[in-house]
Each structure stands twice: as C-alpha cells, then as structure tokens.
View 1 (cartoon, rainbow, N blue to C red):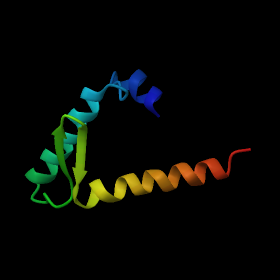
View 2: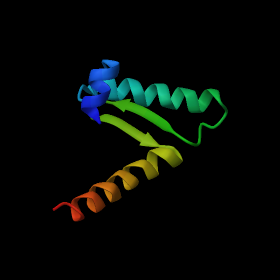
View 3: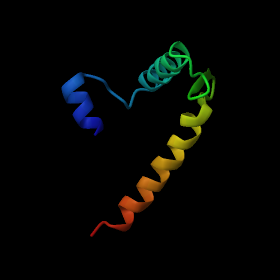
Length: 74
C-alpha cells in the first residue's frame, strides 16, 4: 500500500514529517467538522501521540489485521 501511495500520489509514508502532517491534518479536519473527540494528535519530541476514538481504535485494528494476516500466510 505504501508503494502504491508513493508511486501514484508522490507521498512517502516512511518519512516522520509526513506522518506528523497527516495526523495533524486529520485532527484539524475532525475539529473543523465539529467532532474533536474523534481524533486528536499531539506532536512531541518522542513522536506523535494520538487520542480520541479513532486514535485509540486504529492501532488496535491495525494490530488485529497484522495478526490475522500473518496467520493466513502460506
């Protein structure tokens, strides 16, 4: 997926600044549409701290996906 995004859109998701930018833009959109409880993002010296409903459930869902995907590999 990262390769597809990089080739088609020119966005390198491996860059820390890109991750920070996307997190802040997403949090800004959630705030602008009146749902700041959905996603919050704080940039600290250690990296990005996610919060809110999406910020909490997304890492869990990604972890479950990685576990399930690895279980079905041949």
